[in-house]
Image 1: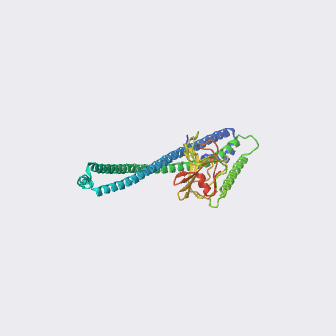
Image 2 (image 1 turned 180 degrees about the horizontal axis):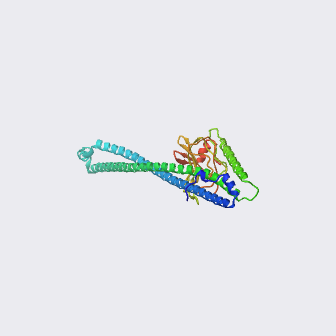
Image 3 (image 1 turned 120 degrees about the vertical axis):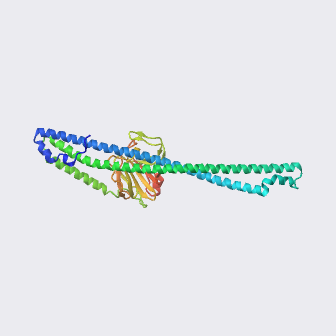
Length: 387
């Protein structure tokens, strides 16, 4: 593929006007414009493919981190439980040892023989039997304490290794997120730039091939009018900050519609956009293609781009460890970027079916310290029930 063209390479409306009066020049310009359109489309496809690749890598890296985090937490919990068990067994062994000491300790057998209160062999054997039982019990308690302590130490070492792995994967996920965001931003910029150029080039191409009385100036004016309309629509969307109904606690329902999928285990979904996992981390709201998606509450956008099976995805940080995610956004439907400060109820995107999705819906997530929780009770507690 040829390198990107500069602004000076693209034909101006004056060039189109000049070529229209000469058949040879017109044919050459038509070919030139068609080549530019193909090149722009190819450039855009490359940028979008790179964004999807990086976004998929980001999701895989974050999934690996989530698994490592769960593994480290589980091993540490086992280590803590064994430490408690070892402490209990050690205290019990201490009590038994104290009891043996008070009873004569290692010289207990001699004491029994010298004990004048022993009445015959039967009494002596009974006392010897009790001594053996206490000693055996002491040994058992001691062995239990040692075993628990050794297990706790081994699990503690495993937990340390798991924590190191978790930290390494956290850093890898962070780097993957940055790479994905850079690719997403580049693709968004390329989409805006190239689509605008393609609209103009298509209009110029039509103007060259038009044999009616419509003039080149008419086509130029049409492109200008279309741009003005698009700008006005974008501005109107940007002013929809209060689009979502707010609760008294400052939270908004992220999209209208009924609940079509809940948090928890379910059968994986496989589509052209990939296969989802068996555990569904969010709540699905089905309300139709293209309807607005609102920020659940105020916060800062930390990611906006492709995210593997989630398709086009936005993540907003609300502080205090709380974040919300919005997935399957329609292509071109993301209205915010990383670093944007959004208000509760602000339109941030539009519903689509990108990624591993079988129909238009919003996959909505609530995360606490990075871990997804059930969004339904969380939102209900804040006066913004889903569905």
